[in-house]
Length: 231
Image 1 (cartoon, rainbow, N blue to C red):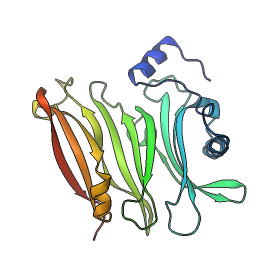
Image 2 (image 1 turned 30 degrees about the horizontal axis):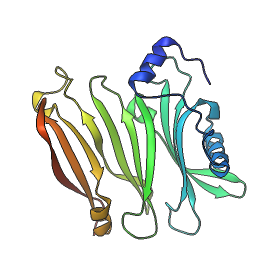
Image 3 (image 1 turned 90 degrees about the vertical axis):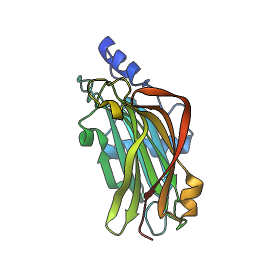
Image 4 (image 1 turned 135 degrees about the vertical axis):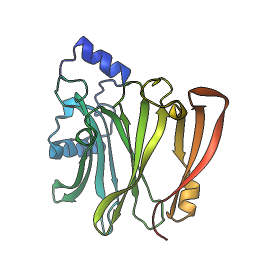
């Protein structure tokens, strides 16, 4: 594990990160697959903060793929790039994992990412899982947000069909954000309603806690919908 000085420890504390050895509590099969994935990415297992590695069908055709989201130390001294999140899809060929899709979320967002996670859910009942990718984005120290993406496989490969905050709090950003946008809320995908639409519409339950900087007396539940696929 790399040495972490006091300034870096404070940075990780603010982001809710803790250096954990993810292999210690994992089963042997999961650990072996995780190590294979880290090796294919060129990431040292000792640098991994947290990782999710799943085996499932996310591409049409026989067999399953290995899907991983990895949060790890980069070795950089700059707090904004000291931690990175990678999203990868691998196909097993013989004894090796071959990378068929990759995303460097730190590079895409100018750093400031953490706590990557994923879920695989068949939203349209076609036997192929859609990927729900989630990570923290700390581009503004006064805005707390956790961003989610829904990634699907289509004729041209993987594509993000929806992205947005699933946890958001800009109530402290008095100078950076206009007063009408100083909101606090959280979103949760309504899987039952989304699957019921056979993946045509993505439904959310949005709990609004504060509006324009003012905390509501009671959280307000708002139902949202977004097109996910063409009918």
